[in-house]
Structures are given as structure tokens and as C-alpha cells.
Amino acid sequence: MDSSARSGAGGTGGYSSTRVWIVAGVAVAGVIVFVEAARRSRRWLRYRSDGPPDSGAFCDRFELAPAPQPPPPAARQLLSGLTFAASDNFEIEGYVAGFGNPDWKRTHKAATRTAIAVTMLRKHGGTYVGSTVMDELGFGFTGGNLHYGTPINPASPSLFPGGSCSGSAVAVAAQLVDFALGTDTTGDVRIPACFCGVLCFKSSHGVVSTLGTIPNSQSLETIGWFARDPGVLHRVGDVLLPAATGGLTQTRQLFFADDCFQLLKPPYKKTINVIENAIQTLPGYQPPKHINVCQYISSHVPSLKDFCEPTMKMLEGMSAFKALSTVMLLLQRYEFKTYHEDWVNTVKPKLGLDISTRVLQAVNSTSDNIKSLYIVRNELRAALKNLLKDTGILVLPTTAGYPLKRKAKQRLSSGFEDRMCAFAGIATLSGCCQAVIPLGSHNDHPISVSFVAAHGLDKFLLRNILYMYSSIKEQVVLVSKLVIAPVINREADFGAAELLKEKGNSAFKGRQWSKAVEFYSDSIKLNDTNATYYCNRAAAYLELGRYTFYHSF
Image 1 (tube, rainbow, N blue to C red):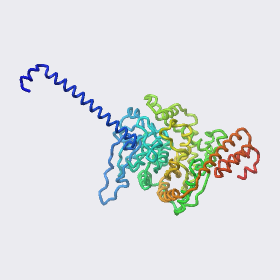
Image 2: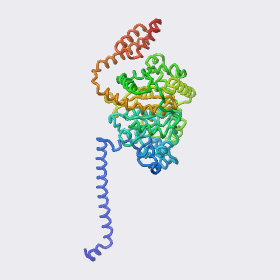
Image 3: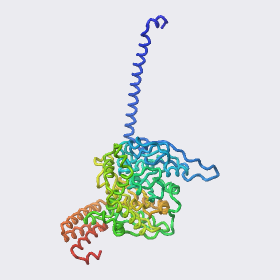
Image 4: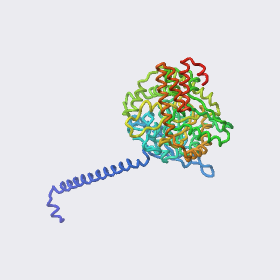
């Protein structure tokens, strides 16, 4: 275009040009927005089908290099070359720990220090790669999170990963990190380890510093960690645990909590046999003992009776476990209220339904019987020390139930909570250390076994886990290869036995002692391995005044 033509446009030329560019810009922006929306849609569809690239485990990803390593010829640091993550309640200097909730993150400042545990691990060569999703405020058993989503369970994507430290367990199970940290109050590390099929270790209360973590319940909370490899689990323990927490001794004694295993749906005898056969091949283990830990706790923790339910519940074989769970949750609520009531009332955070219920229970709780709660804790620690001493290990299931399905309409019920808490209270209230070893699955549900040692004997337990692990895995492989006769009828017998037991319970409540005896006897014919049936029948005989029959049991 020549100069006269350009000048002929007069003063409107610049305006027209500008308008054209604006229109063009809007059009291009629209295309960009459309393309970005389509890209996000494709990415969302890909995540739905394949899952997010990090399995939804992380809520914040960033890297902190390990501390400078010593130059050769000095030996490499214990955790050199290993990566790790930590739950969203571990503080990192310069970042805001979110405690699983955006409102918490919004209303708190960046940390001025890094959690002691994270610092120790970096000092020994570990590389920190981010914070992981957790149930809000450290409450919850499913591992879901209203704001960050639910991490995908690599062991079974259709099931919840377990909580509260779901992201850390998933990060390890999905091989995104070599190990991960969490805090355990009511099973927060142990439950997701079981559901995701990874190893974990819950340290004794007060043995590993919790400085730099956001507390849910300080007198119950401990540091725990996940790993796929027992060697890594042990190396992390070597860094975090004081030297004076035991080691391998010349003789060790395993105590099987038979009453706990009998409450499981899977064939509990297989689990016991796997562990018994494993230690038979190893030197240093005395013949195992089989105990009723519920009865032991009931008789050695006298203050617990104040929290037991009515007499009939005592016949169900769960009385002490239920009472421990009650004490544990009451103590958790009281201490959560002590630390966080003002924040909850001031901020009024947006919470998931299940979490909101728990927080309200905590904030509305009273300080009644608080002294009694701490007395139970002290008595339980002394009772387990008396049982296990310095060489004993209690063997029991990790949970009394399976994880819920992610698409379940009713995600949480009191029954589910009871099953999750049933055995968690033993190590939580006593402050004892506990390790979880996965054993595979039964009917597509994860199975694991737990080992508990007396308070302060963390390295003793951890070294025994390392010592036993290969032999246990060999036994698991052998059992899985066996051609096993159909168990459908046997399981049906077990179900029928439970129905007969319930009829016996109803007769017992109606003071029909003879009928109760008949029903309990029929239960025993169908399942002669359940100690509860014998105890119930003995109780009915007592009511009949047949002391001779009672003493024969």
C-alpha cells in the first residue's frame, strides 16, 4: 500500500487497526482457551482410565537435596540415593504444611523450621521429594480427602488406600519413592500399610522426635514410616531410632493372639501357620505361645472395666478391644480439642462429612474421666511389658476388617470404625512399637500381620522383622502354590455357627440358659476352633449352676 492510500485513512486508521487486533486477539484467546480445555479434558479422561501419574499421592511436589555427603574414601551415607516423602503435617522450612486441609494452609504461615525426622533423613543421604495427601487434620480411616482427592491404591485400585497417611503409603506402593513418613495416632500408618500391601513401622511413643509435625493427639502420636523393602525399613530405623532401643537377643518368644485371629474373615489358621513355619527354620526362637490377649488385657488393666459395654458384649470376645478403642478415641478427641479448638471455631474450615463429624465430636467433648484415660494407658503399657518383657513379640492381625470400596455409597459406618480400631488401640494406648508385614490377599482383599514389642524396644523389633522377612515370604509362596481343597462348605459352616451363636445370645438375654447351651454347643460342632463359643457356653452353664461343666473348660 502506497503512502497516499495509507494517509487517506485519516485519523481512523489507527483505531480500525487496533480494533482488528483486538478482535483477532479475542479469537486467538478463544482458540487457546478451547484447546487448553480440550487438553485438560483429555488429561482428565486419561487420569480416569489410567490414574494420575503420581497415583494422586502428592499434594505438593518439590525437592530438597540431601545434606552434603562426605568425600571418598569415606563410606556413603546410609540413605544415599534413596528418595522419600512425608505426610502433609510435616513442616518444611519456607513452606506451609497443610494438615490435609486448604483452610489450614490458608490461615498459617510458612514454617521456620523443618521437622526433625525429615532433617535427620536428609542428613543421612535421603532426598525429600514432596508432601503427601492425608485425611484432613489427621482424622479418618479411608484415606480420602475432599480437597485433594483420594490417592489410588496400587494394590487394589477399586478400594480405599486407608488413612490417615494414605498418600505416603500409596507413594511407596506405586514405587514413586523408596520410603515415606507419616504420623500414627489411631492406626494412621498401620492401616494404609495393610491396605496398600507395604511394610511399615510405628515407633514407640516418644522415641522418635515429633518436633516439627502438626499434632492430632500428642500423647498418642508417633512417627512411622513405609517401605517396600525390609532393608530400607531397617535403614530408616537406624537413622531415626536411638541406639538404646534393643537388638537381636539370643532367644525370642512369639505370642500369637489367637482370639484376634479368630475374629478375621480369612482362614486365620493359614496366617498363623505361615509365621510358625517361618520361625521354625530360624535359630533363636522358642516354641511360640498362644494366648487370649483380650482376656489378658481385661485381667491386667483393671481401670478398663469402666469403659466396657454391658455384660452381653463381654461374651462377644471383643470387650477389651472395644473398650481400648473407646479410651483411645476419647483421648484423641480431648487432646485435639486442647490444641485446635480455637482454630476450628474461628476459621470454621470446610471439611469432608466424615471428618466434620469427628472434629465436632472432638470440639464438643468434655474433660470428664480424662484422668481415667491416662490411667488405662499406663496400666496397659505395664501389662504388655509384663507379658512381653525384653524378648517377647505379640503377633496379631493389623485390622479386623477389609478396606471399603471407593464407590461405596456409605463410606463410613460405626461398624467399619470399630473394625479399624479393634486392634490399633493395643499399640496406640500402650505406646508400644509395631511393625506390619503384608502377606498378599484373600478374595482380592489385602492381608497383613502385625508384630508388637514392648515400649522402647524398637530396634529389637525392627531387627527381628528384617531377620524373619525372607522366611515369611518363602512360606507365603509355598502356601499360595498348595492345591487347597474347596473351603466353601467350611466357610458356610462358619457362617452357620455364627448364626447359632447369635441365637444362643438371644436365648441368654432371655434367661433361657438351657437353650443357650444347646445353641452354643451346635456352634462348636460346626466350628470347634472359636474360643468365643466355648466361653459363651461356659457362661450359660454358670447361670444354670452347673459348675462342674464350667470348670471342665
